[in-house]
Length: 233
Ligand code: SAM
Image (cartoon, rainbow, N blue to C red; front, side):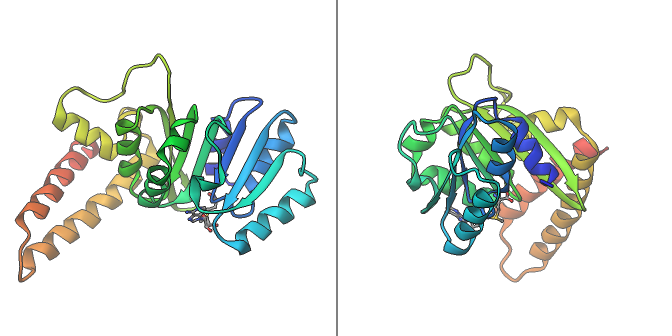
C-alpha cells in the first residue's frame, strides 16, 4: 500500500483533482488517487527512462491509461501553462524541488496549489513559495519507519493571510522550522529538531577548530541552534 507520507499528499488533492506528479517514479501516488476517484486526472512526469517505464507499468497494471498520462522530461517542462491545477513534487531534497519550480516559474505559477514533500531543506521550498506568490496553507511532519518527512501545501489566489510574522527575525525562524509545525510541535517535530540540534552542535564545533574560521557562517548556525533550543525546552 501507499506510504504514509504520500497518503498525506493525496489528502491535500481535492476531489476531481487535475494534477501533475513530478518525479513520479512508479506513479504510485497518481495510481492511488485515480483508483479512488474516477474523475481525477494526472500527469506523471519523469526525467529518467527507468522510472518512467515503472510508471507506465503501474498505469497499465491498474488500467488507468484514461486517467494518467506518463511523460518523459525535465521537471515542469512536460507541462503547458494551466494544464494542471495542482503540482506535486515529492521525495526529493528541498533544493532540487526549488530548482524545478524556479526553472519554469510561469508554469509553476499557473497552478492553484503546489504540494511539496522535501526530504531535507524544507526551508528552501518555504522561501520559494513566499517569494513567488504562494501562501503556505498547511504543513505536516510525519515519522515513517525512522525517517522524518515534511509535507508543505501552498495555494495561489487564496483569501488567507501569510502565516509568517512581520518581524524579520521571527520570520527567519519560522522559515526554518515551519510556521504551523512550530505551533503544533508534535513528536516527529521534536524528534527531527533534537537530531538537527546534535548535528548543528557537531558542525559548529568542527568549524571552530578549522584552520580558516568562517565566523559569519558559525554565527548563522549559532542563531539557528538558538532557535531550535527555544522550541525544544
Ligand atoms: N515522488 C516519488 C515519491 O515521493 O516516492 C518518487 C521519489 S524518487 C526518490 C525521485 C524521482 O524524481 C526519481 O524517480 C527521479 O528520476 C525523479 N527526478 C529527479 N529529478 C527530476 C526532474 N528534474 N524532473 C523529473 N523527475 C525528476
